[in-house]
Image (cartoon, rainbow, N blue to C red; front, top):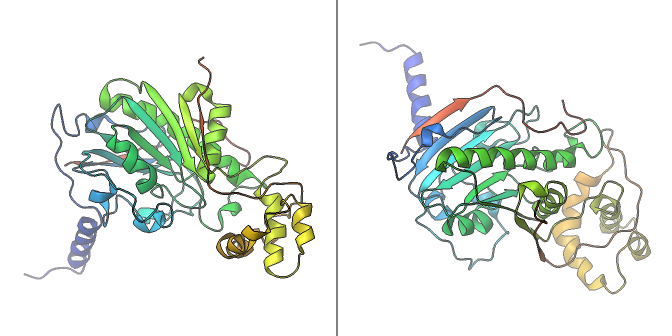
Amino acid sequence: MHLSRGVPLLAAALVATVLTWPTPAAGTADGHCARQDRVHVPGAAFQRSACLTDLTTTGLAGTPYTDTADQAGLTARATRTPSGVPGVQIDGYFPDPSRFNATHGWQHDAQFVIRLPDRWNGGLVITGAPGTRRQYATDTAISDQVLAQGYAYAATDKGNNGADFYRDGTRPGDAVAEWNARTTQLTRAAKRAVARRYGHTPSRTYMTGISNGGYLTRWQLENHPELYDGGVDWEGALWTADGPNLLTSLPAAVARTTGSARDEDLYAVGFARGSEFLWPYHEKAYWGSRRRSTAPSSTRPTTPPAPARPRGPPRSRCWRPAPPTRSTTTPHARRPSVAPWPGWR
């Protein structure tokens, strides 16, 4: 029997698919992964769901359902990792024209992950990626911990990521503004997805995050208290429209690493006298690696210095607002269910 050239190529594609996305377990009518087929994420342009025997990194490591490399450095080596949390995982993305995120080979931003444990405690935890990382970055630090307690979990890549994230949008600040809009979008969509899986909306919803995820936490709680019951800002970065923020202090810090700025220049933008002993570490771990992303370019104007405090040791803030298996692929063609941010295109 003679096979056409297309058959080996098709076979190779099928094998690649199997290797890339392991066959999930089958769901049951009333228990494991119940109602999986009914769970659609409102506003998503694409989603893929899987019924898994373990939603924690203990069971997901080495599979496409997490990315351990993107989690590096965020937890201590002895961090305890739970296991044995079966349920549904949904991966997908909302409509977005930018293409920074190559996870799953999708080359599409506004990617998200939602995890729905079989044994649900009625709560939902939302987070956004720290730094310039992506949606799986806090799987060990946050997802594992809350899933083990029975919470549903959802994380966003913030709509742009990587060292060139600032190029997203048409005006300075568009990229950061999108982080907030994407987090609001995911929170609303995740609440509805939870309701479709369990039969009712979460009884409580919390926001948390590390670094830029901590900033997202503070912004969400301040601007959308109706969506959350509380949150933890974990060493959140400070981003304000007119400063002080990292962009008003970081240029001077980076310039010092190249010898083009003096200690007095750092004091002038808000670095405290007495903090000098911290500078060598930050110069090695942060400032030097930021040279490219903070260098002036034709696509990003420079920002004039303004007073700012240097980023200190990790710290967290808790805040509570005042009361007021099977695998399915589901395409959608809807616009995001959030108001457009500046530079939306």
